[in-house]
Length: 447
Image (cartoon, rainbow, N blue to C red; front, side):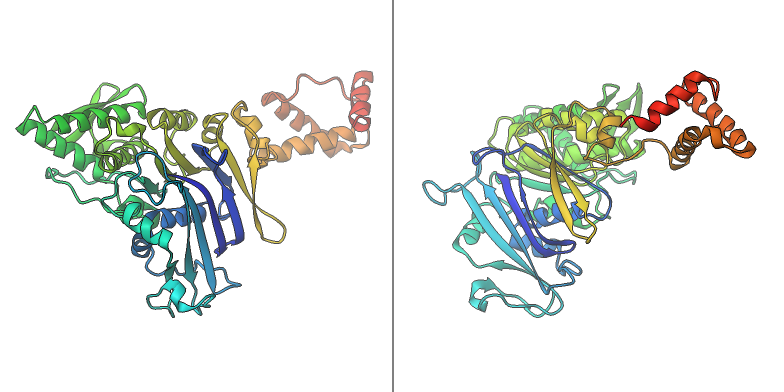
């Protein structure tokens, strides 16, 4: 499964927004980066996509009361998804149809009814709730794409607070039942830790201890640990399990997961959870890390050192080459690390408070300074506000050097020393000299 289009109408800050994630009618962008300042709707887009991909029943479980979701100027919001079926996704709707569209409606505190009640599956229609269109396509998707035991049709979403628990405990070698809603739980519940990695690795260790010839457990163990290794720095290795406690080797030191840094725990938790869900969704596939599907990640750069931020997109794309990643980030290194074939979208609020979304041309060849000053971030200066103020003040004084009074000349001398210290200027010509006057003339008259 991959997502080709999504539309939001009267949802939070969006009056109407349509996004396309398709390169062509038959092929998707495999990496989509969402950029923008805080509060422009990136998380809203990811949560809306999560609700659509979870299916109607799971959506109501994840967001039982959508308070604040409907835009203030309306009483009814709309979410529309266009998804495409791929090989490995169970079921056949018809001989030719592989693309499906379906709609949710989100009611506000005073719901409007745009169509007759027979067009919807209604539950408590006069409260804030998510309603779905009652169509043959959506009913078929319910049974084939959104059921917890569906084969394929993979989708998962991760909020910005994805992490392993800090609690040191001995894990019982058992597994919780995966549900469609649980694939997206951290997007809507910030207190929900990702514990599935430790659970499944301890469970497999227990199975292999009982039967070393358990081929299924061996396969899952090998695929899981190999995929996690691809997402960790070279100085970090999986070190095994002792007394049901999971350990990693960090710079030669054996460390339990609860004692790892937030960055390590964030990557391990996310990767371990994703791998386990892929193993469950594609049980008959030789290598589920090669499967297709959709993964949503909010604030991918969180907890990550800049060296990780630069590499994380490449690591994920190498470890899971056929997944469609849709990620939000504030990190310029994440944005440029996604590759030249990534789709980059910039969210920006205009003077009327309307959020517009603009595609950004390939930025993979930019360095950090270039991308920060490009339309991707629109940063005027890479310096701190205090430093930038001194730089501007220096240039203003230099332009009118002949007219400076004694106090201004003293300040100019201090600023000149400062500019030399931060290596923005070489030793300048003597103020008032011919070379200095020539330089100032050129600065004043050249475009």
